[in-house]
Image 1: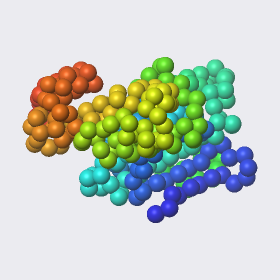
Image 2: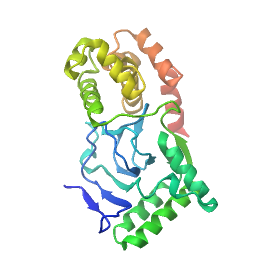
Image 3: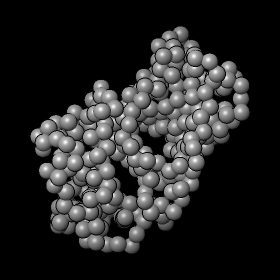
Length: 287
């Protein structure tokens, strides 16, 4: 299924609507100049926004600022993978940006646009926003733009939000920079259960080990091995939630050679150990 685009006619389009339901997520680390409000209609996997990595869920509502790198990846074994997709509003940075909302009445929206530079996840009735985005496809272009402004206004007053990327993350890179990062991401996805050699992944990216380490840290804000550790622990968390595997089995399934190292790295990333993490999950299911 091809993406469904709706662009206002004429050369002065301030927004674009996009419907990708039924396409899944490609897992490409990418960036673009537009602001992006995205609702995840269906999908389960992971999302990376700047230097933040977290689980991707149906109902996620995110607001991403211009040139903020991000990716969405669906679990390969997710049964509804081929039904997954999103509803998206792309806001043209040339016409609608934080500078557009300079009058006092627009101050809350201006602050929201400023905070989007770190990426925002909203908490609240996100399905209501999804229905409103869906309805935009059937509206006249000026009416749609006014409704988009109302959506952002309502997001400022009716929804809590959390910032995703760290305050020090300031992306200043282009498409060529992310090509090598995508190669590394793909390599990790395919080999994280076994030993990963820095020499091998650097060679895949066409760089020396030292150059690859510098490039990865410069673009993503974290070292390659920090990324690898967080990816493995993220997978371990999913196994703890979704399977009956014990901690030892999960440890080796996620590429850790010893349980002690797994426990240490798990606590570094999550703040707790695997057994306590699983225990909290069980209690939450019983509530």
